[in-house]
Image (tube, rainbow, N blue to C red; front, side, top):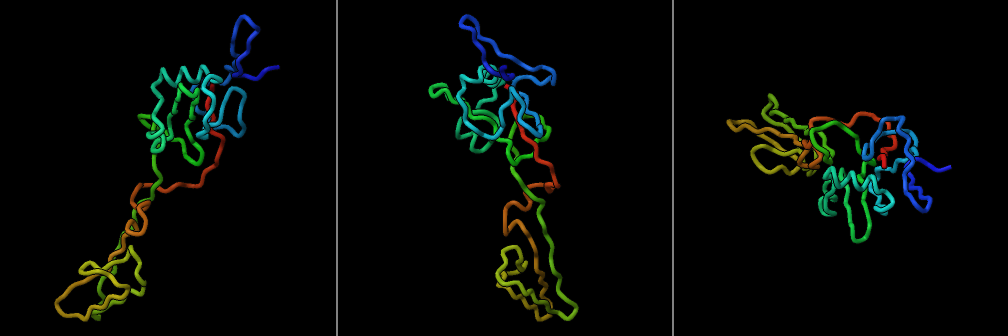
Length: 187
């Protein structure tokens, strides 16, 4: 008994047994609770390219290859090294699959948090934070405690979370609770 996706030879011919009941084609990435025969995990592993001839042909025909340098920034495609017979798979581990116009990696991000504290009616306010990078005075550098003594000057304390961590402001959404399944590529 052989598994779907394996190369078989009888000495004269080579063929691949395939299970076509699910309608998936070579190169399709699907999510399932278990790894199916004829599929390989989309986890960024490097495999022997010659063991996956249909996947390699599809990768090349579909222009889904990038250089190793490009892969470091965008792990949604494949790296093929013909000299060493290596194929690095897309890495979907820890990533949400979403629709789009092109295949690409999308960096994590959070919406930015901004605000300000206005001067009180008594003409003074205090910020009790000590050297917090995302709280600052709009009229001068913030040292942790700001006092205004009234008069004609106006001042406010501003809050900008992106000054503490660039992940804030990098997106308009937040990751909701999710269920993780095995991302797998049909070969």
